[in-house]
Length: 229
Image 1: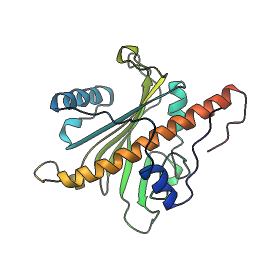
Image 2 (image 1 turned 90 degrees about the horizontal axis):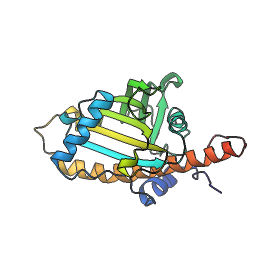
Image 3 (image 1 turned 45 degrees about the vertical axis):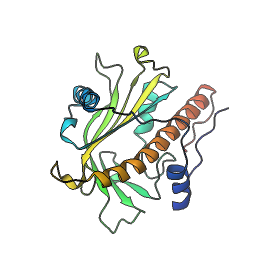
């Protein structure tokens, strides 16, 4: 039987589950060079309309989930400060007026201080288009701190030609420049530190989302109550 991810109770368990823990599935898509980065930037542009080429950092993670695409997307719509899949004690999620369209992320939940960054909905694709692999996504502009750029949660059906086996393929994509500076400033050290932490946290978030979706979907198929986790 599948089980849901264990709920984090405080800052220390956030660190344990999302930073110290090595996830079972490596989700980072390694971009080997400029040609591959350009290829992925082109794909992002085709599917979301975002020009990813102008950002110094382009970070993409992917995981396969054995549930229908629609079911994964519905889980993404529930993202809030009570999610078991996000380090809410370290980076607290505040949905303004309870809406997913405007989100502020606060360090350690200190809402009296400036947020780490804000996310404003740019486009939510709830219904797949005619020829885009049953894709749905949430696309945000990121501003008000760092990172400055875009954040996308994108889910589509598997493409067998790319050796994808699980029904749904979930992507988290981030493109940004620190403090809105586009080129001209050497932030390589900051980027490396940020990417190392971000990659570990994102991999754990996606692994936990996979675990939660597959557990809930199994319970739904078994006719059991789909309780919130």
